[in-house]
Image 1 (tube, rainbow, N blue to C red):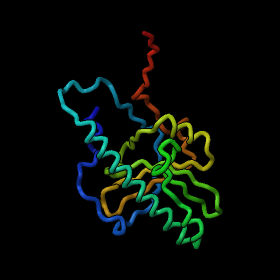
Image 2 (cartoon, helix red, strand yellow):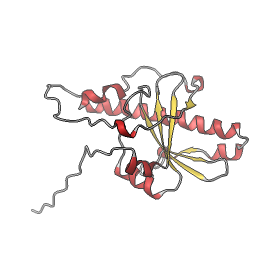
Image 3 (cartoon, helix red, strand yellow):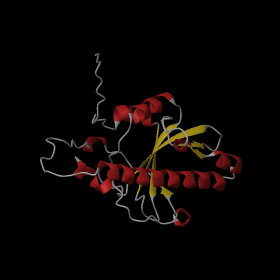
Length: 190
């Protein structure tokens, strides 16, 4: 429901300047036994949702998450003395929204690293929830070295980045996928 999404939405507050941000990578443990089914009946409360405004907020939060990851990936490679690779890290989503990933980065050995960024203003406690498109899911299966980076506390000066490696394997073992949208197609004639 829209109420469930409120904690993930950017309400227009200013973000710290990207140069003042100090993100860090974190490791979290996936607790398989603690899968909690959320759902049941949709809220019956009457409410008006400005979907255009919500889409703008989500886009702004996502863009910020991508900028944080872009900066941190470059920094990581520079710290390893891989300046040539750091210069090649790019934000693919700026030019190709159908690529199925947002950032093209590199492993220290030069192998390509495909990163899909999911950003939230929340911290990393409890259940982590994000949307993934069918295209992103397909690319996770197709591309070797596909990661999902979840950026927590995206609005703060010290966001946390949780890299999920081999994301496609997790969709079959540790991540619950729940369809929430369907494309409806109707053949019509005159």
